[in-house]
Image 1 (cartoon, rainbow, N blue to C red):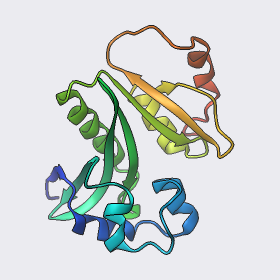
Image 2: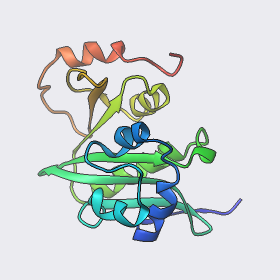
Image 3: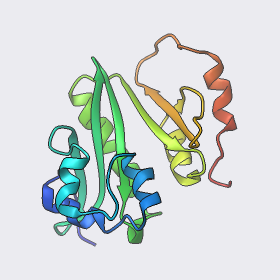
Amino acid sequence: MAELEWRAALPPDLATVSGWVESATALERWAGPGVDWPLEADRLWQAIGAGTLLSYCLKREGAPLAFGQLSPRAPHHYHLARLIVAPTERGQGLGRRLCEGLINEGRQRGAMRFTLNVFTDNAPAVALYRQLGFRRAGECDARGVVPMRLTLFAEPSDNPDNDARADSLPDSHG
């Protein structure tokens, strides 16, 4: 099998990524509100801010297999966003490689804290983020989204109750 390549995403990569999003509901879950359905690949780059956010792909033989973004939030803090793996490639560790690549990119820029948001019903993603060291960092919203945080160095907890509630997220077994 050909080697995986990690690199900054380019507009043509999103033509492939857009094909992984099969419905308006899936689009909102992945890209957030404000991106129009049906998805137009040529507008996606601008709609998700891929030119201003740090956007990356995992590729094999030139074909995107996974995509994700880093959004700077504060000094030493980056947010992982719009993480997606090609449907035909899921369950093969590419989500982990994608997250590790994004975290490494953030660390190279001085990040000590990372955040992300995840739908609580996305058990494989919740399990992956826990394995990577992310912990619940707030309340679940009305859509079923919970914020998670990874801190590379010890810092005082904003709310010590959040760590206890981390176990209330579903694990990979449902």
